Amino acid sequence: MFGLFKKDPTKDEFAKRVLKRIADAGGPTDWVYDPVAFTIKRNSSSGFLHNTYESFLQGKGPQRERILDNFVAAFTKQTEPPPTFDEVRPKLFAAVRERALLAAVDGPGWGMEKAADSRKRPAREPISDWFARALVIDHPSHVAIVNEEQLVSWNVTFDEAFATGLSNLKDCTVAKFRQEGGYFVGTWSDDYDSSRILLSDIFNDLPLKGDPVVCLPNRVTLMVTGADDPEAIRAMLIKAEEIVRTLARRQNPGPLIIRNGAISDYDVPAASPIYRDIQRARRIAALSYYEEQNRNLEQFYKKIGKDLFIANYTLSDRDGRYLSLGVWSRGIPTLLPVSDEIAFYDDTLPEAERIVARLPWSQVQAAFGDLMLDTKMFPIRYYVSGFPEAAQLRVERERLSGK
Image (cartoon, rainbow, N blue to C red; front, side):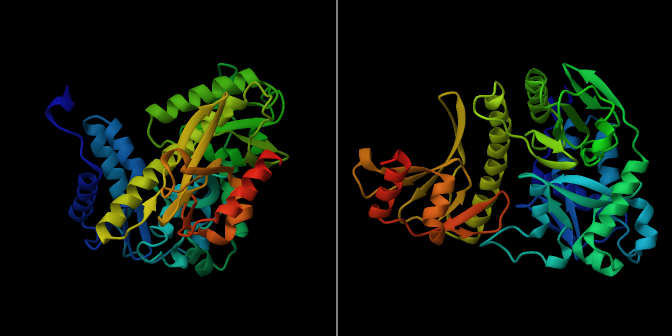
């Protein structure tokens, strides 16, 4: 009923509300809003608005005000001296965060604005295609991601600080799971649920069939079952997709596996009964990331008058397999997503002949890597402006067909 009388704020309106709330609370007034990354920035500090905005939209009445107050509290005391490592040690926690979220601090991307000072970038290491391990400082009202400059000021390495954060996370963790549909769900609900994938010992007492396979559909959800239980994995993936579609703080629902304490993306052979389910989870999530990146890039390039084509990451269901596709067009400077296949398009040819080749990504990189420039964006994109010669494409088509 409330929504009938008052529309939810747009992202830009929400950001303006946040900045006003910070100023009204006596905080700095020189925060800069970045609509492309949907962040606010000031000196070495950054505020990510995505999760707070989603939580705000899902909240009602007074709950919305509490969400805003909790977020704003993190940015109203900017004059205090930075803490020493001894001061921060008990508040330091190991965390798992999406690589896309962490990359947003690095700068808006190739060909856009100046990238952020490398010292201000979050300290992190990838653990999978879409996730990284990182460090946060746990304040009463918020958590702050640790950056490279802080590690230098503390005179500690990432691994040294991470060991401290992991120890703190372990000290506040008692294994607490409920069973649901053949899989198990953590019941901490303290913003570190998904980060507890770093503590592989918490799964030891669960009756899992095989190595732990986990899904982290949002920051407060850790789901786990065994690698030798395909039906439970399928049920877990279905639930993970539901969470991503309906709840705030969503993350990539693609499954991960823990083998001997090491985390990696979970894959199965094409003959597996859950091959299609895993493909769906991973590729639909990638589609969502690339679509959001497309919108942000198009908005910014239009604003600055830069003529670049941002190729879509499209998804098809072919012969029971989900396949992603990007298009490399002759004569059009393009930002190309990483996809299962690349279609080479030449509009100088008759319409029926314009798709001159369709090749797997690995083959494209091997054959035409000299024409591809890694933009260092995340999700990953390559800048291409040249186009392979017809003879080169013919050779690669014949190689693919086995001729």
